[in-house]
Image (tube, rainbow, N blue to C red; front, side):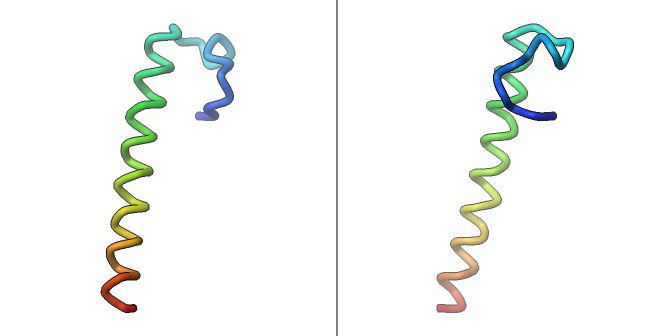
Length: 43
């Protein structure tokens, strides 16, 4: 799914789109933090 702000094109409600975006953002933040933690260990 692209998060380009065009939720209608993805055939979902704005609320569903925003929820999906929030979930993806949280997963991305968790992955980035795990990467940072590993880099600190190696540092």
